[in-house]
Image (tube, rainbow over all chains, first blue to last red; front, side):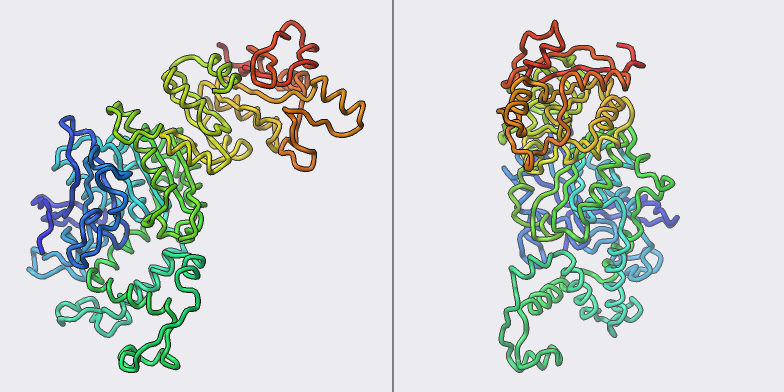
Length: 385
Length: 203
């Protein structure tokens, strides 16, 4: 299918030294760019997100992943701001990635797509922002891996970011998260349809492996309380035919609702996501360690930054726990930056950033209003006080 | 705005960089931004108040005086404000040192334990005093380091802080006329408000 995109013949020099050309960036925009071109908000998506932040997803038909946050009158108010959401480099929704055709072979990159980093992902976004003709972004917002992009923007291009909102994220990928990603990757490698990454040449997909990867990852997005509240130990009946089809894991013709839910998550995911993209992007996350590039000192990339930061964490998030946000806040304080920091009380784990959390919405709206006031914008229609 | 907050705001020069430690609902920093064009930020321990403040567009972070002041660079602010909190921190002397490390000036207010009512109650009843300012029983109070105006002045002298201005204030935070005598202020002032600077920094 056709995504809205730009294609740059000159391509992009990656951190690994390889050059990829052309560079394609697929993106969606919402709202109107002001005549002064100063009201743009870049929304960075998470690992398995995409540019369809507020539109129905073209494959699944489901509402955009942040449709409750981005839109007219919503906390990221498109009546007021021009919102840009690009698909990440390495992604599978139209931006250059393992599905893209490799110019020298005429075939998709597949498993040979060069290793990418968060800096490459952001450098690709910079070319898009340049192309649209925006100098300074009013705000860069992202959660989870999106937050890693926000921090990379603020560190690499401080003069181009007026306000930054790293949400449910960390300045480095923790050992625990690398471990989870490795289990996901091993699940994909173990699928007989994997074919060493050349599955498309065999006209197949490692759907089983990618599905298991998604199931495992999905557990890390939730919390014990959320799982208990949503499913508890409830059991549902399973017809004999489907129990044969799905394998021998059903005893007495029954399955727990949580099992059914995870299987559904796994099977819908493989319809919209490419396994090589999953490997490529999880690796970029694993490499992410902002301080490591500055002799282990996280303060240096943010020293005397004029960006206004709003760091948000969720109390029950154990994938990107509050302690990692505090670590970031501490470094920002040491750097002398302007920092707001809120931990939103929620029992819904990492996923809380996608869900209805009134305190989160109020914080988002309020911070953007406050930043807009400091940027000298006229008062919006949703002034808080 | 509370009367004592107005007194504090009047001590702060326009366009200064201000940190309000224990910023509560953020009223002071909002006021300083709107009326004095200050770059004012807050730290607050109560997460609900933090959320409220950020939702109002104010730059406030969750944190506390005992742990988080140490993270700021030297001289990051012109003024650091600590309202009615010094008596509740774990290490008041260290907090004071941090205030004057990260700020050129510190503005500190605290309830005065030397007030005559407290002295009288302790003397007559032999029980821990309770007044509208000291309103929680000893086993519940967060105020673990009460001090008097004279105690505070002694500490400032010991640690080399210059008292630029000071005043006694009543329960509602209004300034009361005990300036001429520290002893009288210590007896009749329910609260105290100090503007301090480090001795090695000139005005």
